[in-house]
Structure formats: C-alpha cells, structure tokens
Image (cartoon, rainbow, N blue to C red; front, side, top):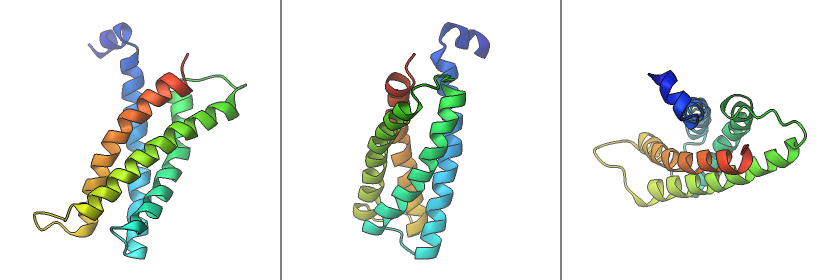
Length: 147
C-alpha cells in the first residue's frame, strides 16, 4: 500500500524521509539543548535564546547533508555553495520561528501541572519544532532542492 501511495504521490517518500531526518536532527537538537541546560542551569529567559540557537545550529549542519543526499536526492555538485546558502537562509528563518516560540513559551507561560522548568522547556521545544518543521520542509523542497 505504501509503495502505491509513493508511486502515485512521490512527495510522500520525501516527506517520510524528511520526517526521519527531522527526527535525527531533533534528537541532536534536544540532546545539545539539554546538555546546555544541565551545565548552565538556564531554563528560561534570554539565556534560552543563545542555548537554543547553538543546539538548533548544530542540528542544521547535519540536516543539510542528510536532506541533500537522502531526502531530496540532490546530485547537483556545481551549485553547492549557493544551495548551502539557500539552505542556511531557510534554516535561519526556521531558527527565528523556533527560537521565538520557545522563548515566548518558556518566558511567558508558567509551567503547569507541577511540571518542572526543564521539562516545561522541552514541551515548548516540541511545539516550536513542530511549527518550524512545516516551514523547513516547504522551504527545502520548493526553494533549495527544487528540481
């Protein structure tokens, strides 16, 4: 059934691969962010801006390679620098979306239901990641790796 769906709608294959790559990159992003929170004890406010930018940035470097090679199967070797610049531009917009949302969530929405500040920051990160994921897929597919 999945094969028929992919044959009829090739974008499904890309979307599934994008989600897998996104899962890997999200794991990298969360791991680094939690390591930063563990060592700095910063779980909200302006400090989250820098920490999130670092973790998101490192995951983005990994994302470029995996999306280029596997998700979108881009074999163009001539425009590598230009495509990486486009990728960074789309990713930076995604970073702004992601970081703004996590900042707003952790700064202006107090933890509920007895949840601690670190877990609350992770809940905010999940929400921010979901929203920025939509932007990133559309930007990578239709701007960076368009055929």
